[in-house]
Structures are given as C-alpha cells and as structure tokens.
Length: 246
Ligand code: NAD
Image (cartoon, rainbow, N blue to C red; front, top):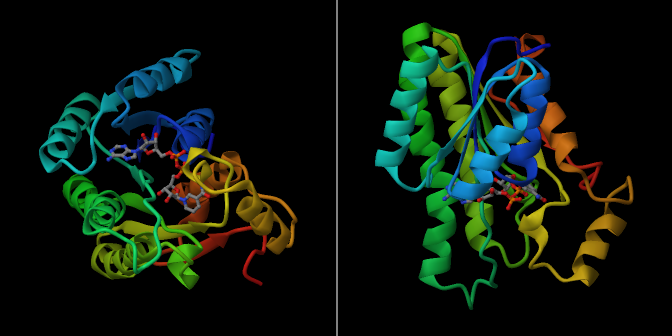
C-alpha cells in the first residue's frame, strides 16, 4: 500500500496505460480520480475499481478544454481536499511523413500531448503549491528521446514534455513537488492499432527483450515514482523500453 490515502489524478485513464495505472494506484491504496474524454468507458472504469475499500471516481473531461479541467480540479479539491499525484497520461497519435502531415494533424497532437499537459499541470500545481507537496508524472516516450519516422507532431510533443519536466522540477522542487517523465518503448495498447503488423514485428525484433511491453509494466513505474520510495527523484526521464535503444 505504497500510495495509501494519496489522492491521484490520472488523465486518459479509460484505456491502455492510464487504466492500468489507475488500477495499480487503487491496489496501492490511493484514492483514484480517473478522467477521459470517453464518457462511457471512464465511468465503467471508475465503477470497476470502486469497492472493497477503494475509492475511485470518473470524470468525463476533454483535456484540450481548459474550462473542463478547471471545473474538474475544483470538484476534486472540494470532494477530497487535496491532490497528491497527477499523471499526465492522455495522448494521441496522428502519423504522417513530414511532407504529407497536415496542419490539423500537427495541431491535434500538440493540443492533447503538449498544451493539455501545460493546462492540467498549471491547474493542479495551484493545489499542490497550497499544500506544499505533490508529485507530477508526465508521459513522454522513447520517441521523445530519439524521434521517429512519420511522427513529427508526436516527437515534438514528447520532446516538449521532457522540457516541461525539467523546467517544472526546478520551479516546483523547492516547494516540495517532484516532477518526472516516463519514456515508454512500444507498449501493447490501442494507440498502436493503426501501425501495420510488419512494423510492430520490427519493434519486437529491435527490443532486446524481443517483445513489446504491457501497460502494467508502465503502471508499475508510475506507482514507484509516485510513492515515497522515489522521494529523491526529481526532474528525471526514465526510459522503460525493454532496452529498445541500447
Ligand atoms: P491509448 O490510446 O490506449 O489510451 C489513451 C487514452 O487517452 C484513451 O482512453 C483516450 O480516450 C484518452 N484520450 C485521448 N485524447 C484525450 C483527450 N483529449 N481528453 C481526454 N482523454 C483523452 O494510449 P496508451 O498507449 O495507453 O498511451 C498513454 C500515454 O502513453 C500517451 O501519452 C502515449 O503517448 C504514451 N505512450 C504510449 C506508448 C505505447 O506504445 N502505447 C509508448 C510511449 C508513450
């Protein structure tokens, strides 16, 4: 129970890594606040986690809408009195080669993966600054370390998230708030469903563990970083890729 009674917000938690993280946090004793733009899925997810001593609530929020973020954060503060952990997990891809990428594809990915991380963190940081403690975890990617073919928009967003992490670690560290980023390799979730099997096999072959990761293997890392076991880890970017880039 490493997160006992900590109030943890996980964005994009109706599916994939976000849902696995919400589940892991619940197992570790946290009060889990799920949010996702997929209304049915987020309410089902919150319901499935609730009970047996677990408190889990779900909010339908599009993270690209600052008004929705502010309303949610105010409600969470009112209900639970504090926010100890924020996982900025919601993310999308809209892949195309540089010469074919539309401005819309570029803007859509930047809006969810980068601008929303700024907006959500700014709203939650106000609460954490008041309580003089907190932990912010940002979803970057190995693509945010090395770039990737066909992912101009996604790479820019994930490099940007690392920039946020290092900047906020400096700004918020002295106030008792730790900020870190996780860079997953290729993890078996819906986000990969547009990628052809041949390319996915290439990811497996290039990984030194010869497989893709599971959402739970990223959730475990978020749980560690959110816990007091990681109390001296601030401003780091942790690659969790099975050795993909070694
Ligand atoms: P996923 O597609 O399985 O889940 C993403 C969730 O985010 C979905 O529930 C979706 O509804 C939600 N979401 C998307 N846009 C939203 C919005 N505007 N507002 C609210 N919710 C929104 O994806 P995943 O693979 O679990 O990815 C989670 C995070 O991990 C992303 O930031 C992704 O970039 C990152 N990541 C994933 C991989 C991977 O291989 N799966 C690798 C590196 C990084």
